[in-house]
Image (cartoon, rainbow over all chains, first blue to last red; front, side, top):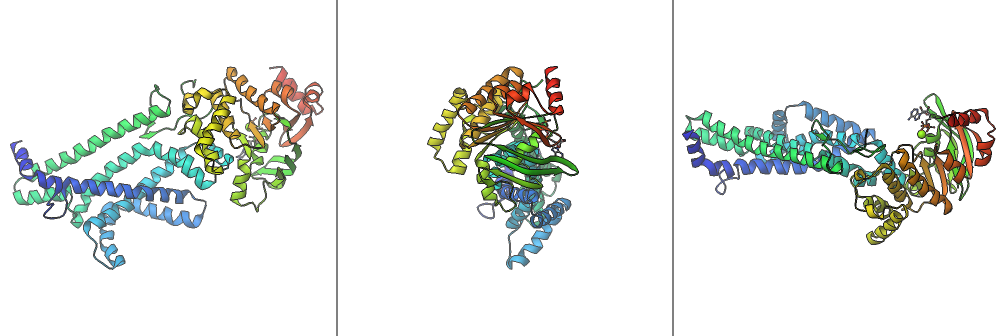
Length: 257
Length: 245
Ligand SMILES: Nc1ncnc2c1ncn2[C@@H]1O[C@H](COP(=O)(O)OP(=O)(O)OP(=O)(O)O)[C@@H](O)[C@H]1O
Ligand SMILES: [Mg+2]
């Protein structure tokens, strides 16, 4: 126990921000930046992928579907390595590990998120599209103002959990020398040499605290969405982490027999 | 205003609309009735092309709705001029009542927010829901939701309104409030095509009744004639079944 406290006391700066400002930003800061930038860029890409997969044009649907299947069927580690070796060839210049990791995360998380977006869109009752179209909204307007706002709002909890997995996925950046939290922990371990168990215990605890906090937050968001959709005061209806859309039709919720 | 000529529609092998020829004139209220599965919804949904047809022609206000050469823009323009009210309301649950009504005039007609809101409030007042402008659909009863849906359709100032069983999903005590709004519209001269099982509404408000069975319009008549002396045996059976309930 004393060991743990000592290690943290001596190395908390490294764990927090890596060698910054003497070297690249690292530690938790880098991990969070990777995850946040990754998911923020992945989000619009995922919407685009989902819309492409739902589009009526086969020439658009097929390649995107193939891409999503491939990315989802290959371990992240391999995608990281592929990007690492391919990106410099494609761009004709060196790419930092950090940038490589961002690119990989965007591709990978966008593929997973796109399935969530697609499911969110398809879960909406068909009557929503019909009502939008019968008012005279075209496909794009109906998507933008009526379908997507509902689908994305319902998906917020799923997106938060995707963000949490992204944080865990960043650990793999270690293999291409991205200086994030795991990298920092390994540096410490290499210095101390004799305390791997303690060091990696601290590492695990740190990931756990960050992810647990976010999971708790996700649950809260979930409950809030459910409550708002049901018009207040009714038990939330959450199935597999997806907030079910407010009931449409026959009777208003709360009066359903 | 709405003219069907020799309209045919198939679902696979099923002949859902069989050689429909009929017309809803400007200012006329037509009630479409008939047994379940007779094709009433299919018929009314072809008017704004929620359903495509196989053959025939369908004119709305002189425009060929089902023409293969319609661009999506033309089709959207046409649809914006046809008010459609669904059995299941289909309000947008992420928008407040007021936003449900202002969305389309603002986005489609480019109406300014202030004006759109003002008009929406007038419409809400007219359907008796001015005090619900800020509420969300999930907070309203079925009858209230359907009245908002009517206001939403009216906000586009359509020359005709279509209703597909607007009261069938409602608890009995809420049917009257929705029918009252429809009655008001009819009194103001709105062209209306209503699929409904509310025979009293048909008797008192309709100018014509169309009786459908198995994809055909078997009888069109003034309501008095239809209810007192139905001509077609299927219509006679339909009415006597209704009365025995
Ligand atoms: N999408 C579809 N695919 C196949 N068959 C369909 C489809 N929609 C309707 N039908 C069939 O077409 C026929 C007419 O259906 P429609 O919904 O128009 O009847 P309806 O008169 O509105 O009945 P109800 O009073 O029950 O609403 C029915 O037999 C129905 O099963
Ligand atoms: Mg029907």
